[in-house]
Image 1 (tube, rainbow, N blue to C red):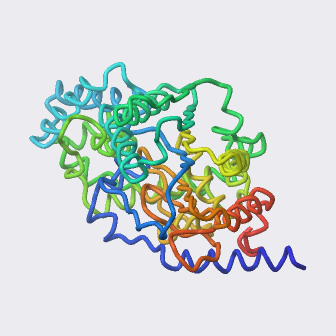
Image 2: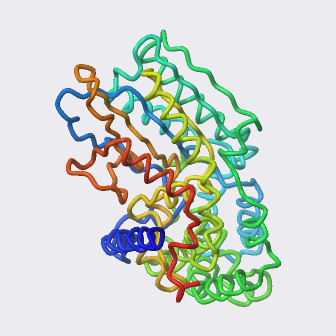
Length: 437
């Protein structure tokens, strides 16, 4: 009975969170970069930091981050789009706008060539800036003798993100000693995906794939766009897969904000087209990584190992009275379930319908490029009996979790720890109402 009551209470709190998490057409289209979803370049330039309670000082930071801005995953993702425009150019089938778009694509191709999936210069700058703000807000954490460790998955964009972050810290205090490792050793918690979740996400799961394919088909309306880019409809009908090209242009437009190009392709789309297109990968990421009710909680439960590492490592620093930081770098597919597992506000939804999902869950709010979660720990050195306090930050914004506090954004560590441990012990599927499963 107690377990059932706890689950119902957690879901009631979650419902209250979600009521204030509405995403609208106007929000996305007033800043078209958001329509890039997980390609949204990290938007924060100034962290939010409420003054700490009197007598308290920061002593430890637990950090998990997605890599910074990157190029499209593979060169061919852009090359195939350029090839369509090159052939149309040779055939004399481009409009003036089509020629302009081809020029932007060629310039983008020159910058990206040989760098598919790699960190962009902006991605490096993002992590350096986040590290600098972390240091400025919590200088005592990085005193001489602080114990600082940094780990990343062996993917180069994550390793380079880690290096940029730690180099920025060492520039602030050159005496810092930071251990850094990028290897397979930490994958068991940094980038864990259970066999069951992999099977659920497999291409053979038609019950998962068919609704996504149907939704994508409904949201893809390429005729207007093709007419603005190509002067010969017969040429388009014979030589171009219009839907496929529209998606190629959408991804190129989404990634341009992460590059050094200083230009945009968003102006070739209408706001309605971008909003419709964004909803498809938003739904895609949700059903494959987040709290999709029919996923049986498999994706959120993938974060249990990572959250356990976060709790146990933090408790070790608390118990041993050490100063320092634990820095972790991985991917959006790890950040998204971790945020939901912690039950951070606005990071999960309970929705099966793709047409309604945007109202309760938006990928750009959870995992933009360089998206991160930080737990900042505070103690009162003058009062050994004073409780350790903790603040939770998502993308450098103070956020709520379903834990009682009379001094938000600060939570007693013992209460927050109890919540996080309970989450690792509670199958996420048990929080989902039966009528949504």
